[in-house]
Length: 228
Image (tube, rainbow, N blue to C red; front, side, top):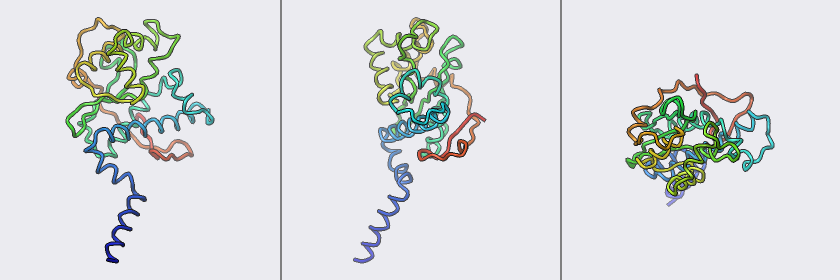
């Protein structure tokens, strides 16, 4: 009986000390948990690092994630997502890098996001900085808010914008690929896009390196990735 008690205590202690290890092993079979973990960790990371970069340590979370403040954070978010996927044990072959003007042509917006295929066989668009396109007052064709204007013209587009704003991810099927591609290309009359187009026209691989930002360390995750 004492051995059973000791085993229970050991298991509980390990889970408390190393929760991420257990999370990784369990959640890879639970796509919703994986995606929520990726998004929450990415948001926490770019919030912590963004405050440091902007020299605004007192900035609130609500203020930071306003469209005008989150703009320009997409490449950092993309790098952090890849870092998290690596630590989760997801293969690089499951990750597709999206870069707007690289994938969609030089007239598209410059924006980075990740397309991720999980063990459930489904493909997901991960874009935690998408709200930057919902900025008000900058909605002309050459401005950052124009993709949001295009999406909001249809109910399906409104639903896509809402899901990316609230959840940071969405199942990436051909319908979503078409709406997302046309909005970010700033041309709803563009050719029809599908998932395979994004995979075939992905950005090249990162050369990534981990580093500690300045003299600071961070809780989630403690290290970052940058272009090398």
